[in-house]
Image (cartoon, rainbow, N blue to C red; front, side, top):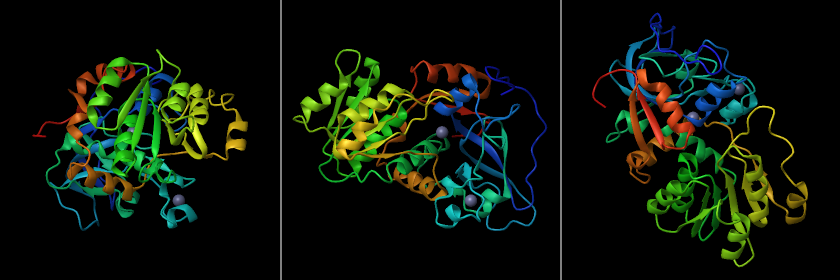
Amino acid sequence: MKDIGQIVVEEVPNPRPEPGGLLIEVRACAICGSDVRTFLHGSAHVKPPRILGHEVAGVIKEVGPGLSGYSVGEAVTVAPAIGCGACEYCRMGATNMCPNLETIGFEFDGGFAELMAVPAQAVRQGHVNRIPQGLDFVEAALAEPLACCINGQNFLEIGLGHTVAIIGAGVIGLFHAELALLKGASTVFLIDVLPERLIYAKSLRENIVTINAQETDPVREVLTQTEGRGVDVAIVACPAGEAQNQALQMVARRGRVSLFGGLPQGKSTGYIDSNLIHYKEVGVFGAHASTALQNRLALRILAERKILPEKYITHVYPLSRILEGIHAVREGKALKVIIKPSGGES
Ligand SMILES: [Zn+2]
Ligand SMILES: [Zn+2]
C-alpha cells in the first residue's frame, strides 16, 4: 500500500532474515476486513509504504543467522501480533494486550508478497507454527481470523444449551457461530442484511436461525424467539455502531456482549445506551487480535475438520489481482479471498 486508497503491485528488493529471524516464501495470505479498512481509511498502525497482509501461510525459505530448531522447507503459519515479551501482559500470556504490540502487515511488512521476513522477536516468542498434516496453505491461512474469534469468545462463557445472537454473517460471524455450536450452544441467531449470506449461513450447520434485518427488526425477532428473555450472549461481528446497541437490547439480563468488530477511527462514540448495561447487569467485552497459542489451537481445529476451511474459501487469486480481491470482500460478495503470491502446489 502506497497510501490510503492506493495499492500497487511492484518489484521490491528481497527481504533478508535478521539474526534469529526467518524468511518465508508466502504461499497463501488471506484478505482480512481490516486490510480493506486500512486500504479505505488508513490505520494508526500502518505508515505507508507498507506491504499489508497478516493471515499468512508459507514455507521457510531461509533460516536467519544463529537460529536453530527450524529448517528450510517447513510449512508454517505466522501468528502476526507480536508482544514485547517482557511486560506484565506478555508474561501472563495475554500477548495481544501488550502496550507495545507490533503486528506483521501493520508495523512490519506482511504477506502480500512472494517473500516475508519474520522478526526474531516473533520467532523467539513462538509465533511460527507448523501447519499440521492434512491442511494445505490456503486452508491454513484461515488460522489467523479463527484465532481472533477464539480470543473474542474467551470471556463469553458460552456453554451447553446457551443461546447466542451474532450480528454480521461474514466469515467472522460464521466462525463465531460454529465455535459457539462446538461449545454446546443450542441455538445461534445469525443476523445480516444480505440474503445470500443468510442462505449460506443456514446451510452451514443445524441450529443456526437466520434473521434478515432488512425485513424484520432483529431485536424484536430475537426476543420473540427466546420467549422475551433474550440471548445469553450477543456478538457484534460487523463494523456498525447501531449493531452494538442492538446487541445490548437483545441480550438477556446478566448476559454477555462482545464488541468484536471495531468501528472506523473517529466513528466509535455515541451509539450505546449505557442504561441497558446498568439495569440488565450485562457484561460487555472487547476483542483485539489473538495470541500464538490461539493460532495453534485454530490450526488444530481446522486440521481436525471441526470447522471445514473449504466452506469459507470462495476466491483464490494471484497477487496481481489483489485489488479485485479487496473489492470482493468490501462488497460482501466473497467470504474468504486468498492471495497466492508465489507458486508451488497448495
Ligand atoms: Zn485478520
Ligand atoms: Zn509486552
